[in-house]
Image (cartoon, rainbow over all chains, first blue to last red; front, side):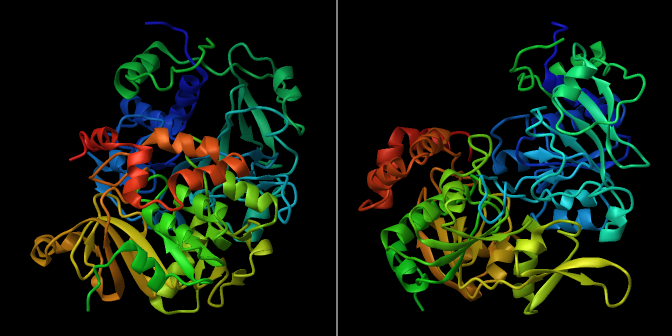
Length: 261
Length: 293
């Protein structure tokens, strides 16, 4: 087995390590390979009692990882299939521990934008729309995963808040009426970031193997908090890779890109 | 009362210029594509199009063909094939389309309000976000009983909801082949429902599994039997989606001229069977059914 792993495999391992046993977590229905792989990896490594809510319709499905899973594919072998709007209720009640979300832009407070670039009335780029990914902020915490780490994506302030992070800083979520939650980590192809407790600003937590701190700084459109010493993101262990490749992703969906490590 | 009718009759009777029309399904599953083609052929205009989930091809076709004045939706994209639907994007960037900007659950809340007969519905979705700044039907409300903050969303009652199902009886008691999307809510909130079904079955057949009937005949105005009516999307329990055709659409819909060419090639002056033969052919259709039943 090759030790060379891909960014998607590394991301899946990083997220899996954040998941605690017994949690109820959710994966979105689109671009779901990394989230789904991470929950399934966690379930097999250290969190067997974790429940995975997937695509807003099913609990703990066996549907294989796929870039093009259909609705029907997803419900086969699931523990339960529910009407879409039920997942919003479950999120709003605060019953969901973690959820994954992405965006076209992310800012220093972890706010996300899937709606538009530029002025909403006459956008320079119209995005897909926010889908259900605003409600994700009612999970106890959410994980942000971003496939492009550039200053185009990591901007000082998003053009439209479609999913709130810490808004404009300490106390802002509470002031707006958000009682819990917020982004816990951001994982990009270059690094792992978290949020400083005091300022609620994004902070570099680790750089991926082969990436320098300077590279991350240069590709981020705002000032990241950089601790005195920045460790390397732990590479996937042999056991993590074995479970990923033989049990979670035997078809190699996450491997279908250039290996980096 | 005869509800079983042709698609042409159903659209001409129940979709008027200026109607609020809700299209069921999710992404590339159970999209009532044949109905969208018929709406285009009949040249309906000024529609308020409500997409419960994200009926991507149907939404993009209707917008591109100029049938839609206002879009009520939280997302229009073709999943991994193209995250942003091309005609939708173009129309908004040209300021040719009114957008009811919302998070998915705002659409749900508007429909729940209509389904319950109340003027608006509170929800936690949108709290802390920008939706209420650009959408006059979403407001921020302080909890009159406590200290919470919520969004309230004005009810939306579709004049007609169009759904695709695996089976239906001739009264419109219809059963899905799998996931329900949020077609239940879409039907309860609507004044009338058009059921486009793969197969009209007997009343007794439906009564064998009443727990699977989620579209209920009482407000169904038309039942249209249309095999492969959701093609190229997935018809749950009947056929898989045809990614090749979606790709062809996305290639052509990239430009104004290409989109017009697509409509001429597959929609204008074509019956649904013509479209199926041109776009897929019998062998491909059989292949899409493989392994589903």
